[in-house]
Length: 272
View: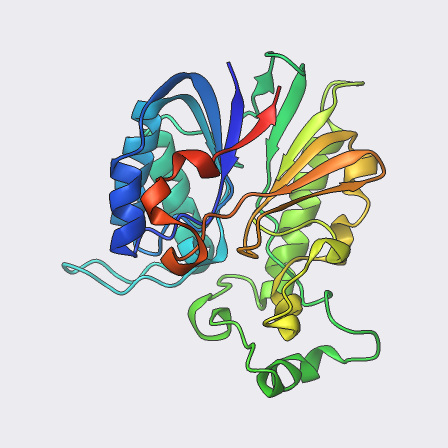
């Protein structure tokens, strides 16, 4: 029995989708999916069904791509912002997948017990250089050809801004973590890295404002994290901070991995 993790499956790409179809079953293992499954709800639903059939338990958090506004289809209105998030939660629940809105599971296997905390936190542009004003972030990033598509495609409705949505999610998540059973360590799961010093993206260094929030910088200590799982960067790596292991578990776009190997080698073993 293992706890595995992956993120950024990006199943809009046929190569990635075919690789998921070829993934063998791991009926004894749990899987964490740290966001960016796909943009379209129907693609996400197909992926959830496929993964739920292959693993004993699946835990999911959303990435920014899942939250992009969906075009209206067959007379249905466009899904955007929190409404799209809530729709995705229901899709996950219908497949038996744990979401940030559900009771969080406790890993009782080797290396446990640990509370697996699936977090939906977003970002607030605070991963920007000192002295750079928030209102100047997009222009600064544009100079480095690094403006995130979220500026057009990720609607924060009903919140006034993505920063406000992030602040609300941080407060909700911190409250739940504070309320966990005393002494129970955690495995923190978020699409975005919890700390700015974990970001290494030399090809697009000015992309950092869309990569998290400084509000979570000390959460690994504050909430006794054994491991923190993230994706988003498409830079697979492991880091240690204050004795906590940080795992970036992205698969990525087809050019960022080796499709001939299949997805299985990219499943990161978290525990034991």
